[in-house]
Length: 155
Image (cartoon, rainbow, N blue to C red; front, side, top):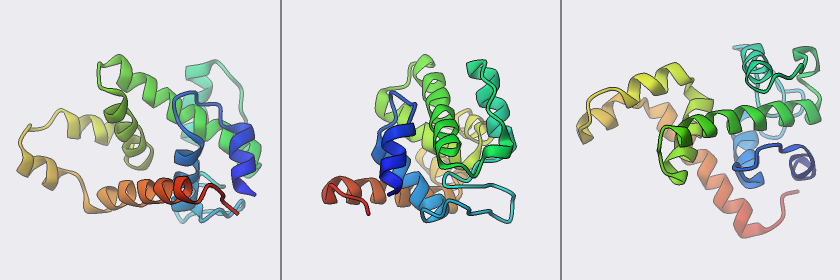
């Protein structure tokens, strides 16, 4: 029933429900009360810094105390994704590249992605500089997106 939550609470106009689902499946295996060893919580595995960023960017007031609520978790997570998508689009990246960079930012952080983007521009460096676990994260999310689109149903 996670997809019903996503359909209702995804606030990102440029991030599909299937991508939100792919992230949720990858991050928490659809466990509403999931808590990671790093302190990330809920379906989308959010940390307090995400709430602060979303609140600042959107001039909103979401409270991290409510992070385990599926509605709050998906709302804040989707707004966070939209925020970074907006950033990359404004930097003149294509829609597809902006989406890729948004998902990478979600997993790796904007600072790391920024360093990666500003590094050398040759294929050997690009492969070496992007950690294997982040490449695998992107693959997992997109594989799940494809499977969801193929199945047309989630639960």
